[in-house]
Image (cartoon, rainbow, N blue to C red; front, top):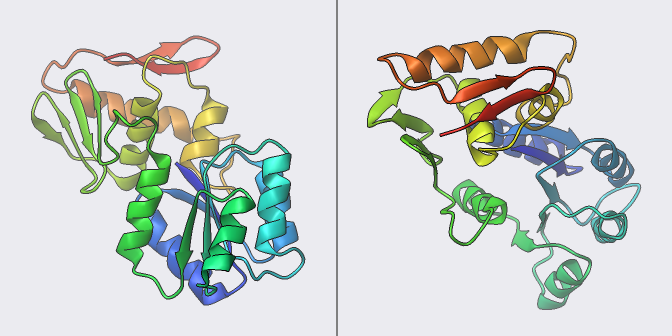
Length: 222
């Protein structure tokens, strides 16, 4: 999952960014509203964390602009303004959630997981595909009850494939959702990580579940 943070307080932005990266999210950051608007229009984000008091363009205006432009992913307002009327303004502008500063990072993570939940029937803490099970809280993956020892990036890639099981995902889609804005699309890093995952998923004679679709990308079939 790829997240954009729009926050002008650099210490707060870096704190959130570092914490989210440790949770295997791909994270970009903007320090003002105009930069945030540009990045949101140019890149596909699964969620935006948005401060209200921003230079260039305030968060309420930015949120409304994004919604008017068809941006459909969740937006979480993160601000020191805690009056009910301020929360109402944020939600009316198109935000899905509103968290006031100071906040506990664990609560921020829980709210992010809730916003990224695909359907009410799909728990936000686990993903399943056949005999493959991913625990999004502990970042552990199991196949047929056997734990897979994965790096943070391997887990993030497997999570993205599992969330889109049964559908073809292109290398561009993978780079946009698993890596951040600095990813070099000219490299073969994605293919390398796919091969890493295949070896770990299929060791012990496990059935092949990550398939190459020639000329298109990859598909995970449980």
